Image 1: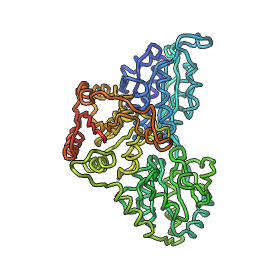
Image 2 (image 1 turned 180 degrees about the vertical axis):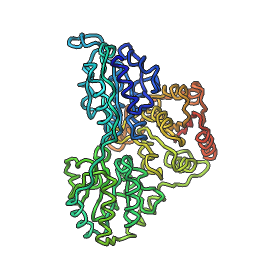
Image 3 (image 1 turned 135 degrees about the horizontal axis):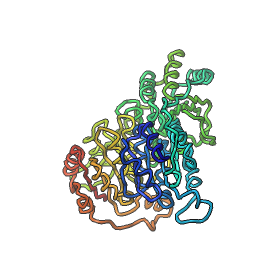
Image 4 (image 1 turned 120 degrees about the vertical axis):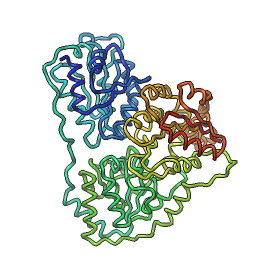
Amino acid sequence: MNTAEVLVESMEREGVEYIFGLPGEENEALLFALEDSKIEFVPVRHEQGGAFMADVYGRLTGDAGVCLSTLGPGATNLLTGVADANLDKAPLVALSGQGGLERLHKESHQALDVVEMFAPVTKWNTQISDPDIVHESVRKAFKVAEYEKPGATHLELPEDVAGEASDVRPLEQREKVRRPEPDRKSLDRVRELLADAERPIVIAGNGAVRTDAAEELRAFVSDYDLPVAATYMGKGAVSDDDAHSLLTLDSGEHQEASDAIEMADLVLTVGYDIAEHDPEGWNSGTDTIVVHVDSQPAEVYEHYNPDVEIVSDIASAIRELNACCGEIDASFETDWYDDLREHIVADVTPDHEEGEPFTTAKVLPVLREVMNADDVLLSDVGTHKMILAQNFPTYEPNTCIISNGLASMGISVPGGLAADLAVESNVVAATGDGGFLMNAAEIETATRVGCGYTILLFRDDEYRLITEKQEEHRRSHFGTEFSNPDFQLFAESFGIAAYRPESWSELAEDLEEAISSDEMALVEVVLE
């Protein structure tokens, strides 16, 4: 076997089903090693799209998604999607080709120090410079990518090394490493704080849905009538149908969840990442009693300096905290947040008149009505994301996928493809017109692979979120407007169904037809 063949067999041992990427001269040996492999290679239209696919696939399955590029510009195109996975804590392994080792010591065609370039956006990365280290490199790349907190890793394979004979064989995949049980002293300290608390509140973060902790968290908040506010990436940890849910940790005009935190006397954060949501928004005074429950210690930050940190397997920690509350016979106030929840529920279910123009906030209840609880909604980045994150009720973990670590535009269309491959339920990829055209070419990839998901396109002919920020800061805006093609014709040119509803009744009918069809479709919603 050559090095590329050992690498492919090693990935088969890791359970890899898909590799999303582009062919190049320098990854030729790897491509032909994939030809007879159990792994399906999915040629994409842009390396960024391939990286986003691997990103979303990893986030939904918990197994590292894999993307591939050649050297130079191919590798630089991967970078944004790899960084997105790393900050969003999605397991991903990036593979890149490289020129032969004999020319990397000098300036040469398309040669960049890709390993150095990927260092800031990965948990670990290396060059496979010797055929005898390929099996160890692959095993480490997947182990590190999938280990809590998950993220991105990268392997570079020079073309000459790829073709060299190798005597090594793949290492066996082992059970994923789990975090230890929570520390007893920390639990005792939390028990003391809970014994003194009357109005605790929970913030559910990305880790609550990523680590199978949702079931334990739901039992905990139900047993003790605790309110829960989720971050954008923690949506669904506790069902928004549950009377304990205050939906999303808010920003902007919706402040009920922040009001609840201000009224609380203890905040319990579960799987909370400050890269996703700045704690200054809910802890500006820095005097809130905070208990941090996560698989890693808290970042050092003035506005997030927890009184106690439980660093362990998150599900185990919540189970132990539930037992702690029973030991102290905790009796918390149970109705202090009811009015806040009523206001939130009213805010996210606005009525519409048949003749009025479409707005994102009023489209979402229509969308929620036609989607099942376990269907997956994937959001791009822009104004629609902010509204969707706050206003779209989510009932199950990992059914509302939002990038809020790096928060990169262009993720939705390629991410929808990956989601459709990863789950059995229906998938809707929501996007603005700005983010849509960044990776719209991946519609061709989706149709070629045989995917069937719905693209919900909000059109307003501008980068509206930036317009809104500029208007807020300067009372004017500049550089945010653009024109668009005929999106119906654009979609139909790929051979997919396209809808442009002109009334609310049409909108409901079109969404129902598109989502239930199991075929690729685009629904364009023209906003006022």
